Amino acid sequence: MLSTTSIPLIDVTVNALNNTGVFRKALSASLDIHHEAPLPKLHSKTLRKRVKPLLQPQDPMPVGDTTGKVALYATCYGNYNSPEVGEDFVKVFQHNGIHIDIVPKEQCCGMPKLELGDLDSVDALKRANIPVLAKLVDEGYDLTAPIPSCVLMYKQELPLMYPNDPDVIKVQKAFYDPFEYLWARHKGDALKTEFTKALGSVAYQVACHQRVQNIGLKTRDVLNLIKESDVTAYERCSGHDGTYAVKKETRDKSVKIARPTVRKVDEQAPDRFISDCPMAGEHIAHLSAKVDKAEHPMTLLREAYGL
Image 1 (cartoon, rainbow, N blue to C red):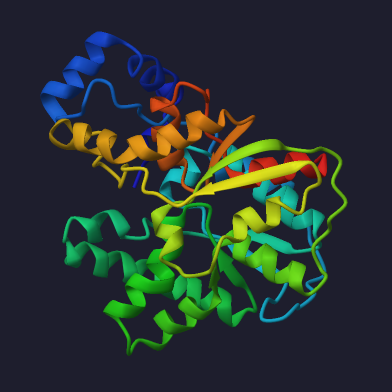
Image 2: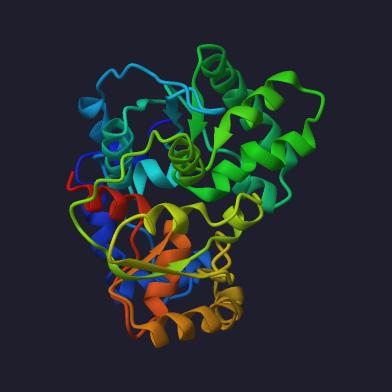
């Protein structure tokens, strides 16, 4: 399927239109998109395009349950809306001697369709993705993704739906949250802790789709290894939940859900604000009076390494 971001300058045009009142009113009227909701930017230079020239072979070193050989599932949002995070992943993982590649082909993980109850579409996406991912596992790869909802889809949702599918279970066992993976390497003394830059005060909104993985606050734990860095975690819902924060009928409820977290972040007045979920982070930052933007934790880790 041809992506609109493959058409020259379409990303520039769409991003410009998204900032105009007339266009936002048209979206509100035609697609029920709330005129105040921040919309993600499109990038024609996708994660895949940015990462490809950066990939360098590493000699995988198994540590604990990790193989030291990782395939990054780019995800729809990661590929087109926050592609720079892919560069952060590659730089950080390679710096730590982890061989990293990109999953050769993928479709949507299916979480958006699952939340809409469209199980036929979920099944079709599962049949497209699982064979590719299972083959990578057979080749010795661990799996990870930059978006918590996609990680959760493969670690929990699909195994619940297909408990007797051996490839689904194989993929489940190989799939890691990125900071869960890095923490496992650290516990095996295989994570570099020589940092060149402190982060200062960091407010961290813990994404719901990450919390339900029951892995603990591994993002906070890794970032707190950096001297003169203080990461404060807020384990409350952002209220985003896919389209919930952008639809006219649910936008106000979404904002109400987000307010307790926004208040906590504003009271802290941090130097940096992060969330593992770019959509949740952007929602909080848009409502905050104290933070200008949300960043991915991997971006801060790369910065701390001086990469």
